[in-house]
Every structure is written in C-alpha cells, then in structure tokens.
Image (cartoon, rainbow, N blue to C red; front, side, top):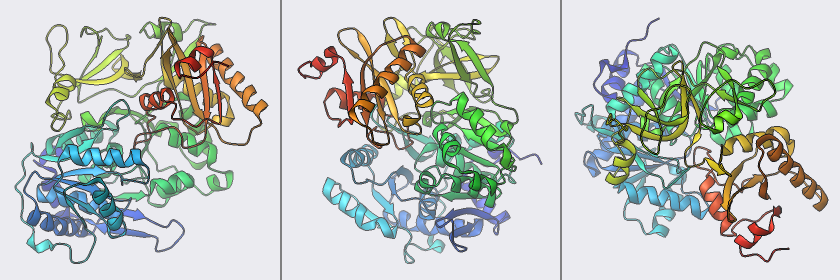
Length: 585
C-alpha cells in the first residue's frame, strides 16, 4: 500500500486530529511497564489520545500564552506522551527533559535547560511531583510544576484550537551536549512533518508499519525518530523503559515480537548489547522475521556490530537487509539519511589514506578501516566541505558535512550568534546558507559515510585519528572492556599524545592490572601506530555520557586534567604526571 504524503496537512495538530476522527479505535501508543504480567501494559487509542491531549492543553491554555515554554519532566510512560501532545494542542512550546536525577552534573544540565528556555511551567506525573518540587526549590527557580496525569487536571471540552501555522514552534529539542553546552533547537510543525515524511519515503513506511522501542522520549531519536512518525502515519507505537532494556536486553526484542513491530531504532551499543547478553534460550523464544526496519544511529556505527547482530539473530528470522544504518541530528529535526531493504553497505578503506581525508580501497597488506554507509540523502542538499575555508570537496574526500532543506531547524533558542555560526554557513563560492553539522564524512555514489566529529578528531604527530576507532578496537580485542564505555583524547606534553580512559568490570590483582594496561597499549600501537601516554581504568558508570548515551569526550578530558577521576588503575608517563601536578615516579 502506498502511504500518502504527510505534507497534505499544514500542521501536526491537523494531522493528529484527522487520525482521531478517521481511526478513533486504532491503538496509537502502548507503554509496557511490566513485561511479565498479563495486564502489564496500558494502551491509548487515537480517540483517547486526542481527548487526553485536549485535557492537558485546556489546563495549559488557562495558565500559559501561545508560545510559552513548558518543561516536561517525566519518567518513561504515557504521561509524557499526553503532556507533549497537550503542549502541541495548546500552542505552547514543549521542552522535553530528563529528570534532574541524583547527581549534581545531571541537575545542572536540567537547570540550564530550564533557564535557557525561560520556561513558564513544568509538567510531570504524580509519582515524580515531589522530586520535581524539591529540585525547583533547591535551584531557586521561579516557576511551578504540576502533575498532568491527575483526574482533575484540565477538561477536554474546554480546549480551544490554537489555530497553529506551519511555522509555529512545537518544541525546543536540547542538544545532547557531547561537544559543548546543550542548546535548544527550534523545531516547528513544518520541520516535523517534512522530516517524518522523509523517513517514510526513504524506508517505505506506511500506516501498517508498527513502531516500537525503548529510547527515551526526551531524546530526538526517541521522540522525533520513533514516536511522532508513528503517530503522524496513524500507526501504532509500543514503548518500554530504557532501564528495562539495559537490565534485560532481550525484552526489547520480545517487545518487537509481541507487538508485531516493523520499525525500531536504537544506537549501535544496543545492538552490541543484545549480541553479548541475549541467551540461546531467550533467542529460541523470539520471532524477528517481521522486523523490517532496524534503524541504527545516534552514535558511530560499527561494521562488526552489524555483522554480529545479523548472524546472531538469523536463527530468530532476522534478515541482514532489515539493518538500516542511519545518520541524523537534532538540528536537522532528526533524520538525515538511511536506507533499508538491502544488507548494510560496508566499505573497507585504506587507513593511511583516510588520515589524509581520502577514501580509497586498501592495499593487499595495508591497514584497513571499515566504514558503514548510511544511505543516500534524498531530501537534503548536501555538501562535503573543507571546514577551514569552505571549499566544496569532491566525492570520496572527507570533510565537514553541510546540509540544507526543509527539515533544517530555524536555529538555537535565544542564541543568535551560535545560530549564525551553525545554521548560516556559506561555501567558499558564496552558496548557502547551510547547516554545519560538525560531523566529518564523505559522499560516494550518493551514499553518505560518517567518519567522526570534527571536535573529537585526534591530531597526533601530524596524523588524523578518530577516537571512536580506538575505543571500539580496544573493546573488540579485550573482553574485559566489552559493552562498557571509554574515551580517547590528546593532551599536550608538550606535543599531542594519546590518553585512553576506559571502564572495566571484574576483580584484578595489581599485576593483572599492569598486564592489561600493557596489552591495551600494545593494541593501540599495533592498530594505530601511536603511543599511549596515559591509560586509566575506571569503575563502570564513571565515563560521563549525554542523555542519549554519547560519551562526553571533552568533559572526560577536563575531569582527567582536573584530577577529578578515581581510577582503579592508572598507567601514566612522567610527562603526563607532571601535567597533572604529580611528582613523577
């Protein structure tokens, strides 16, 4: 069945109201809170979802003006969905956020979002209301918080159509902060519909494609790359808690089987976690033959993970052509490129040539790096550009990826200088404006290959290395590091030298730590030809990540240089110890 374009309606509100009228009894969204209980899930059909959105919107319309920002502080569950749609129905601007959490750095992030957005009110659910109030009071913030899931919160029949237009803001999607302070990307109705329609067209999604997954809904991939496209298509979406997935990865795959899911998205680490932790007995209970679109994005995609996942779950009916490596970012709403219906395109390239920004086949006995193709880019105007001077580079040459198209957001909330720098780029010959993605990559035969982040690139003795390659190789070669987080960066001692931090699980003697450190250094030298001036092993959970699971490399470098880490084992060269203010051993 050919799916009509999502651009037939002017706004997301018009589209959702049409679905409520045309398919009121169709399951819209289900949240599974207990995977083992017969009654462990709650479902809202399109009529009920519309009524809930109007109920929340009526309350917001009484205390907010159109365009006011509303902070959403919800754990995983349906109250987030109804609160977000309540904002959309009210004409207010949703500001999705994680809960403040127990750690100061988490609380500082949420406080920064609230202050940057200038929120008027916060919504949460009954179970989190006290925690949200304590956070607001402790931070001295000047707005109230209310639980939108109580029975007396608003009334659907008091809702008024805000008469929204295509250019009206729907949300501020705060960036992950992997390379800097979080900034609020201004996403309007036009952006949302164009982006979801681009995803629909590229993958061949229809109203009969059920969606599902575990990605947090405050993250762009969970909200705009999974939940909203499902609702815009008039499909069904089954959701579960991210923590439930992390504890029991097979429950994600069981969810897809149970709810007949055809599209689910996750970062690369999730596929790797399933390969390592789903048991043979759990595998035997799965039928993944109906999972046609297994989107992989949000972090560097590893060719070995794709191969391992396809091989491991073939016994459950999973097909390699269902793997859909994707590229996207909040500033482009979310989806930029991706393709399904074929096995992933994996290109072996010469490592030495890649350091010189050229993709070319490897020599027979030469060093090899495998790059994963992320499909073509049908709805964006793409340039690969030399970030130093704006020169447009030819196909097969790596540079910074620049984008232009209707999915590109208007800019960052309240930050005109940052908006101009990121969204107003022009090539050396004056073409533009383009969105500077900050990502490095290349185009080959229309396919986009992402090689890394420009701010993360390591320049060591004149060589260009990608930290994710070092981190992945260490995890691949050393089981003690598998599924854990690590980071590589450089320090000046006085020339740039590599430092590796990595989490490790298990009990080790001092001699075992020393031997492992030697082995890790050997791997880095053998695979990348550089010395490791510092190697630090940490407890699980020590490596800071963004809310989407991306390693905060610049933050971990700062913590290392500030001496703010508590290592299980540290192996540092004298020059690095001196840099840290330590007396060399």
